[in-house]
Length: 215
Image (cartoon, rainbow, N blue to C red; front, side, top):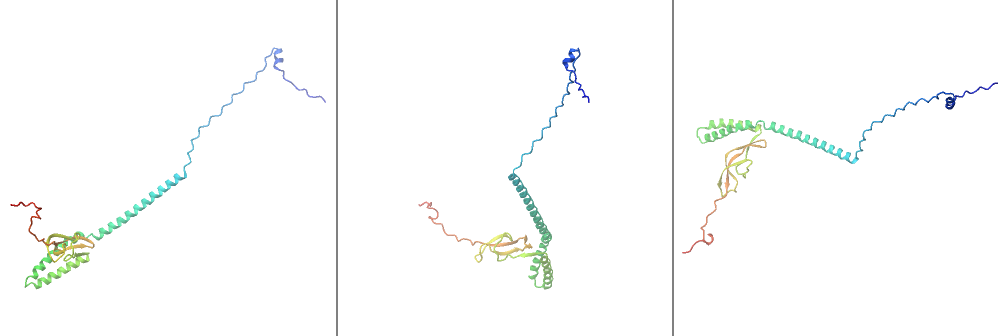
């Protein structure tokens, strides 16, 4: 059994001996350089837990404040609405007061006349009806006679010395005052007691400070 002969390629030196040109190896293709990756965005620094807790507390505080302000607004609006409804007739009630004053003056004049019994009775009935209308709408007179002067409910027209009353006591009522519910719509015009006039004493030389000139 014959052995297979191995074919060997001639070397470059053998090729040159026979005038040939040795085969040059083909240049290797240049390898493409890998593209540089785009720089990554810097990562956000980790936030401090304490800072986050402070921000959360500030947000919670703002929320509580806003809620409290809203509750106060609702409460204030409800009060204002209630007050507006309660005193809606204030202008009308004030306009009726001069009518009551006229009734009172008419009754006072009629009582002084001898032949006016029927007139007094008729006007008295109308007067009582008017007072009832006022009471039903929350209008009541302000008590003044014998009371201590109160600038909220009384308006002092003048002072009158009175040794029998404490200074500031209401002596006379010139015009009645009225309130609507708890609000004064017209104070009572009154005369109040003043301090009694001080007794005068003769001025002596000592009181004059020793300035009197001797003769």
